Length: 454
Image (spheres, helix red, strand yellow):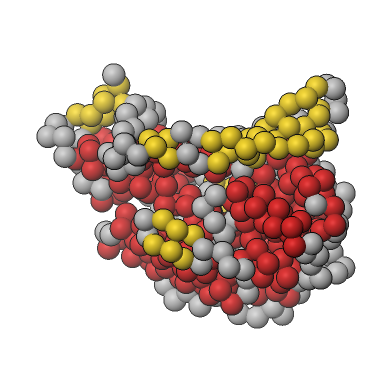
């Protein structure tokens, strides 16, 4: 089986190649939620995914790509993952509106985040839902306790979201420690488990990659040890705004009902049964909430890319979200079937890959590419454009340089770098040829706005 655009029996040719200089990550790989960028820290050329996935010497590198690609799928196909794009775009829109409507040509940086439209409240909620990401390498889970956060919304109402404090024993330091458990631990377990099915020798720290498994096995040992069933439990929990709450609630209901799954579909059916989410948007079941979330996120991206020059990107994003919606609704348990019984990529994986393609991806040398989804009529040339969102957010919070400098410097199309890139990238909006940053700055109506450090 091969990666391809039209048929599995033909290898694909790398499409739309780019270089992109980014901060060096200490991990083997990284995926930027909401910004659709995947990075693998290797010197190998990762543009030819066929060669990367079949060369025994590069199998571990491809397994890292696979791990980060799972996070890409989570970004598009889970209710929780979709909130990444929603959060960042809402933040950008809020800051942008305040800057444009303050009646001044200058604005102070770093900007202050207020709660006029619940931006501050949503930020604090997001941190609770996310949970902590750092912990010990080798642990033994002990217990969990419930706490309540205190967050005030813009109308003065006190919100008290549940927080799950997990206690564990650090097997190296011989100390009891604690961790606030959230969606990161669930997402990382899924990616770790699928990666390990593909490459059994891969190892990760217990936190955040394997603590979810320890929790389940101690809280409800009758569930069984099939990793695909646990993937199903974690994935189904991501179909809510508060995944850790759904995770623990589902485990407790399983214990009460003495539920034991016989396949992955059983887990999803049990987790979703009679489940209703009630909020400002009304009462919804799991599928309804997901559809609402994906349509809302799709519209959010579209609203930020209204200029005609971004039409191809909008078409790509709309295609991605529609394909992701169909995938989740028609095949709720698809994430469990990406690896076949022999440890190889399954037919299901290749079908999903063809439907969704890839995000923009790079290696350690900043060389990378982009594989568009099958059926996309107008293939755009700027898969990196969403990274500009990050650059402008950085400007709003006080950064005076653009980290896309090396990317633009190496662009074969035209020379568009100068000292403004390093000292005041917002000034580039006045230049004749607009770089990606300047295009966005202009589109968002910031032409005459100047950031000034307090």
